[in-house]
Length: 277
View: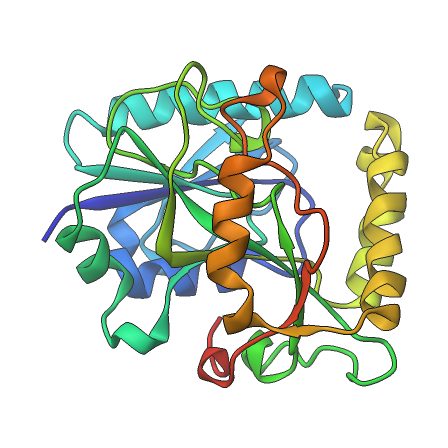
């Protein structure tokens, strides 16, 4: 089995960190998790969680500058960790990597069984509450017991897995100077819009307002209406073709990032995903 580490950075989180720790601890062991706490004013995970905590001073930055700094910080930590581990996974705190349950293997087992290039991407699924069909999220239950719809997203088809000491671009959406490969059995689930109240709370966060997240938040809010208006495709009918399309439809300036799907991006998730995360 490969030794695998996971990294995240967090500030003003009230929803996801505990779940992030539980998910990746089950996959890789708490001792291999590294949580960067952005600000000395922030609470830290309890010692009994067993995770590694790194505290840094919070410096207000614009959205773009903040994304670049977090990527720089994560890249530096990944390079350090890769001296003693085989793989490093870097995600935001609301992002959860899974292997297709149809394979019947755990995430660490799957990653240990395949050949990995310098970096590897998972197909991004932006999971969004359907406001007409789904109730507010119950935080005590698995998210995918309660959410059935997602948008296949180039933005979350991130180069999040490193086997070499490379440099992530902003938001870990790409690796600088390297092409990407989307694995056929891995998915990155993004839950930033898992509930309208969660999204609204983020929009009201004073730090995010100062940093200029309003335009980003407006795009996120529009997802609720997009999901409501869409005629979703069964996800298994779209997964393979979406991977191919993302590899083909790239503009030259963004050759090392997945192309955006032109249609058919809203899907209904497979039954086998229920109970996850």
